[in-house]
Length: 214
Image 1: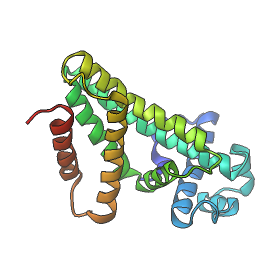
Image 2 (image 1 turned 120 degrees about the vertical axis):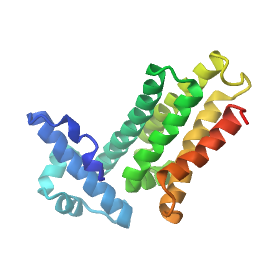
Image 3 (image 1 turned 30 degrees about the horizontal axis):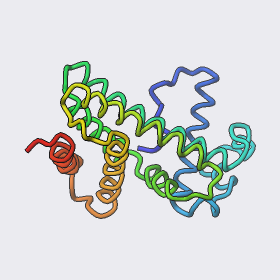
Image 4 (image 1 turned 180 degrees about the vertical axis):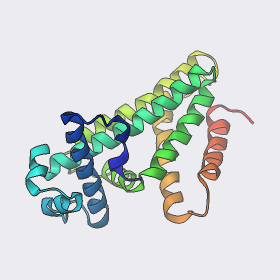
C-alpha cells in the first residue's frame, strides 16, 4: 500500500477532501522518489510528474519541496501515532492489561511499517540527520509517537503491572526503536518471515524484559 492510501476512508467528495487527495498524491510521489534517489536529487518537476499533476499544483499545496517533505513526515508519523493509540485504546476497551496493550501496539507498528516501508526508511534515516530544515518538526512528531507508549507504560506502573523501577521515557523510546529497527531488518533481509513471526519474537522480548515474566 502506498502512502496516498493512508486516509482514503475519509473521502466524501468535498473540496477539502479533493485537496487532501491531491496532497496524498504528492506525498506518495515524494516518498517514492526521495527513497529512490535522495532529497537533494529529487526535483519539484519530478514530484509533479510522478503525482500526475501540474508543477503549479505542488506550489499551490506546499510553498516548497522542503515544506512538502516536512508535511509528509508530519502526516506519516501522525498516522503511525494514531495506529499505536488505537491499538492501546482497543485493548483497554476489552479489559486487557497494559502489557497486552503494549503488545498490541508492537503489532500495530509492524503492520504500519509493512504497509509503508519506504516512508519508514525515510523517517528513520532523517532521525539521525541534524542539518535538515525540518529537524524541529521531526522531533515534535517523534515525541508524540513515543508519548503514546510512555502513557501506557506509566499506567502499567501505576496499576502494579510493571515494575516501578522502569525508566518510562527511556523504555518507551527503546520499544519504539526496537519495532522500527526490527521491522526494517525484516523488510530488508528476512522477507521469508511472516509478520506473525516478527511480532512473536518482539512479544517475547517485551514480556521477558519489560514485564519480567518468564
